[in-house]
Length: 346
Image (cartoon, rainbow, N blue to C red):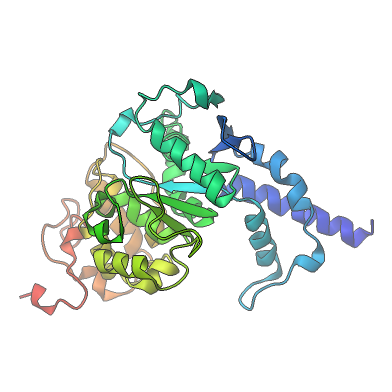
């Protein structure tokens, strides 16, 4: 092996390690075996991915690196590594709060035949894993119910601050709409009323929507990605959420269009009041320390973080209750009027 080849292999190895450590979730579900019916589900840490995918990543050759028009050479390498490390991620509505399947319940390797089906959310988890394996050939999956150790404040903090990136890096976001039978029912599903699902909707490049019987709303043979083109699902979601189809397909986070993005969040709710702010961290691409117990102060801190990077006057175009911490700032997203609503202000 020449010195150039050695240097290339070392570069691939280093970038692979950095991607695993910095871009992947702390824990994932390993679906055993790799083919056929799932018999065992195991929670593994991100470092287990290295041994699993090391051979696959080492197959990358220098000739495989073909940057796109807007890419640097190393960006093209990361794109190839990301394509090799595939995991499915779940978007869903929590219904039983803390009684849903937990990290502690799934912490050790669990055989499906020994599942206690009375545990909240376990049937949903298993159905998700089956779709991840059967429909998208993913050996790893991530679900917020049982892939975050919520007893660890540092892990919970990392998960909340990294959530947007984890959904964006996923191979497929499997979205379960438990109150939906068909596209005609979409507007009635509570999934569209929750705070965190806005992040999941915008962050994921590839999404597949399933109804309450776990049948895809659009057949798989028509599309494995309901975001890939203009279709009836995308059009209906745009109508329900008031989010343009272009943003649904390829949303770019940032502190621009503050008023418009706040309107998207204005009718959504979260169980914990702090999550109104925390669920918007990735959408605005700002950094915010997680501190459950601070209440409405979390949204004030979010607005402060946005102001540090935003130079658009529209951030002050709001009406309603002001923040208890600064009268110049709104109390929550509902203070922002719909874009173009000139009748909102006297």
